[in-house]
Length: 351
Image (tube, rainbow, N blue to C red; front, side, top):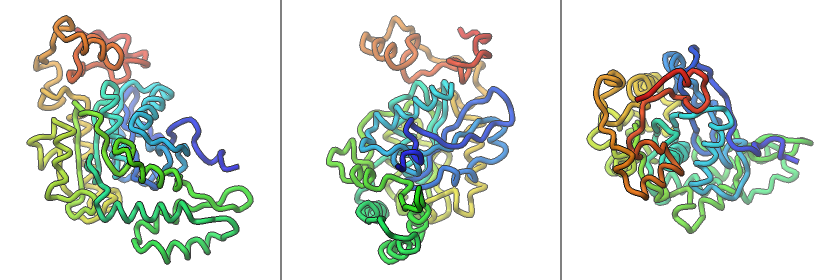
């Protein structure tokens, strides 16, 4: 009866259309349980002049598809299916909190379609020992077993207020509670499915952990709250270096902290400064070859390309099945951002 409320064909959300034509795409994912629309403050008017921006949900979060599987492969495939459905060849991914996990996984597994990854108050690591994660997990498990039958919204609100002490988490849960047909209550997020995936014994399937699926070879930007309960400043930046090699030696620029204790950076007082940092990243670095300083060097500095004939048989098979068969992985070519679909790309010739 409630199927009409949920996406049954992958990701969905809102497009903030670029003010110019033929511009690249940014796909943004919110934190678990959050409305994708809440991310709008991160994308200022200057960014909207150079990027199309999609604000999307994902599996089991905010009217996303209800499913027991949140495996890395499924999460990455969802992103690519959305891109194919909307005729997007290449895109950059942005994620806040658990949305950063989705963005990082999709970037790694589908690197040949992803130009960069931006993570906001997230680190690709095991979060299951963090107090903030335990609190979130307990709240989701409580909601999963809470019987909504015959209860009014006010009654459920009172139950949540009594059992969820974290005020920000309480706001998220209340926002997830809504009425369907016949005034029957339901959760916008799949509480039972999320609880199952939070308790998965396989570390590659448990959404509180980061799967061992590889590295992302492209550009990246990670911003986190200085007093975050999710990214501890002392050591939690190390996984960022491990998963995104280009970030090594870039603390203070492509990894940086924001003077706040707010996990949801789009809600903090410095959101305008954060939006400027994101705009600058997309203006000068997104999609730029890792060996170049920034976009100003494209076409001026030679790239160290290897011949297709010099790569190994295994690399060649991998590239034919996954990436561009004319170049080795880790070395993306500069070309039209939508070369797979846009008619404009047919008029552009590459060496």
